[in-house]
Image (cartoon, rainbow, N blue to C red; front, side):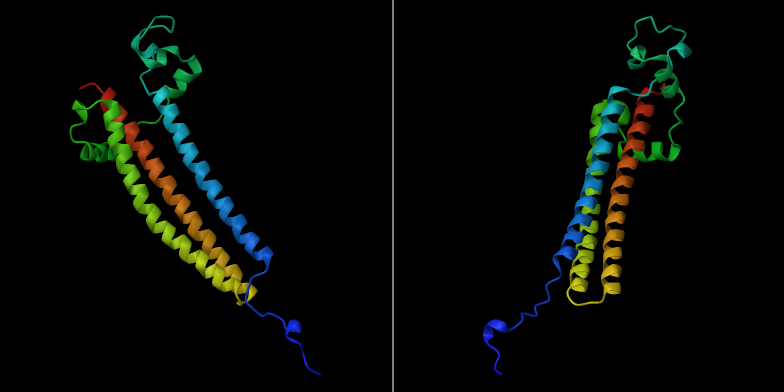
Length: 194
């Protein structure tokens, strides 16, 4: 019996559509997480700009009814208490800010924050290049594993991809946390009595 060419089976190494979909889901979830982390950092930055840390009004001997040029004057008593109870700025971070902005005393707070944000953005860009390369390598390893390797190899490759994505997220969060600490240190330097 002779097989016709139309009865031949194509044995290309295409992963099942379910496996491709699971990789897409992981990538969408990781991207959503990173976007959420970035949005959170922006949210806290905007909130910090609107409510800068200042001394408690009552510590200055005024009442909340008195007008003040201090931004905390319009805060509720519980908000003033929470601002007053914030931990002090780490002296090591203050020293880092002084090294990054040697002329901090002559700059406005906004100009100093721009310098810190620019430095953080450069650090983030550098970290992104590094982490993108790691994530891309892990994605390629996962695709190779899906094209003919065992289920255990595929799971190991998927785990490696997830670890690379987690490491990238942690790196971004660390940069954002350092920026927040540096901005808080700059604000404490600018509001401290000279």
